Length: 167
Image: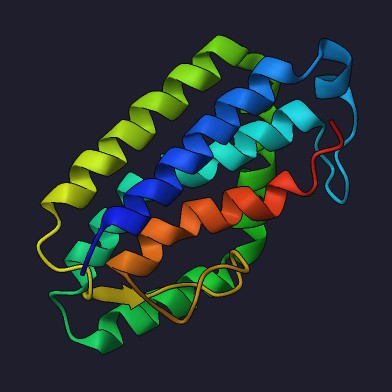
C-alpha cells in the first residue's frame, strides 16, 4: 500500500492544528464549542488526543492481529460494555488537558506525536492487519479496523471536531 496519502493527511492536520492555535484569540478559545460540553480550547485538546492515543491503538492492533480474530472481538465487546466510564474519562481528560496545557505545549505535543506517527507508518510491514474495535466509543471506530484504517482515524476525528469549533 502507498502510504503517501496517509502521510499527507497527517501533515495537513498538523498544519491546520497550528493554524487554529495561532489565529484563535483568548476569548475565542474560552467560547463554548458547537455541540459539545467543552470550550474551543478543550475541544482542540480533544482533537489532539485523537493523535495521542494512536500509539496505544496501533500497538493493540499489532498484538491482537497475531491472535485468532475472536480474541479481539471479545475484547471489543468488553470495551463496548465499558462505554460509560470511557466517556467520563474522555470528557475529563479533554477538559483537563484543554484547561491546563499551554498552547505552546499543545503545539509541541502535536508536532512530536505526528512526527512519531510518520516514523511508525514508514516502518509498518503490513497495513492490512488489524483487530476489532469498540464501535460505541467513537463514531469513526469500525467493527474491524486495519492499521491503514487506524492511521486515518485521528484525521477523520480531527476533521469532524474541527466543524464544531466556534472560533
